[in-house]
Length: 332
Ligand code: KG4
Ligand code: ZN
Image (cartoon, rainbow, N blue to C red; front, side):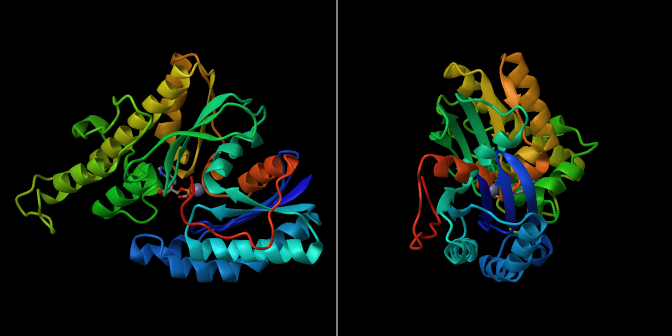
């Protein structure tokens, strides 16, 4: 089945057509330059930018490859204004062409991105999804079932990258900026906390890491940088932040897969685009005897192909949504 996927959950306008787990066509229109002056995504600006980009993106994708047979759209979780733009476009397209419509959970779509790999991972497996808004460990015991094992109790890993970058005066989005700044830095120059690393749960916590970086840079309890605070090297701090996040995420993901007796680990979400995280996850998975599946970077960050893949899974199960399908900011 040829599925049109649409994702507008945050600040990328993404449209793709996927058939049998093969990307027929796809576009991702970013908005980084619009949000950079504010140091983060401004929901109202994102919604308006989606409105401007949606029809040209649809034209481009469908112009390349003609008709779709079903429509899959991210309807949860995400920023409600941005979600509603994609949802309205999806409903209009499905209604006008008489096609089935299905709403997709954004994080399950991030897991399903790995199904675009050749060969794809076969369930059962554990998946680590680390993005700007979420950090979750999933178990996929069988095709189409997504069981949440644990999640962040405060900030998401990507949010921690973004906030630490802001403290260091680096641009939004912070993850790629920290990765670049970390080149040549010494990750052991700073001893940063690794909250919940050795906790028996599959949960995460990143807000303490951000606070430790803030205190190290600005001096304790100060709003502005304390003139007496010790000097620091941006490359060293960036490398230490990246190492701490990569260490906690990969350690707990490998442990979760091993503890449940699974042989496969999947990575996804924008933070999985990070080179150090990919290296460390690959090394630790191999050491533990796990097979690891890491999508190419463009399929780790937000894209609509992954939404079409998850949508195809739901459609094959017979799931259909009506035109009353709603956007939800939070979702289990
Ligand atoms: O999955 P995604 O594109 O959007 C959400 O669903 O949130 O993830 C965006 C997050 C941002 O926090 C961004 O800083 C982070 O992914 N990110 C990275 C890298 N590329 C994107 N973090 C670390 N290293 C990267 N190379
Ligand atoms: Zn995402």
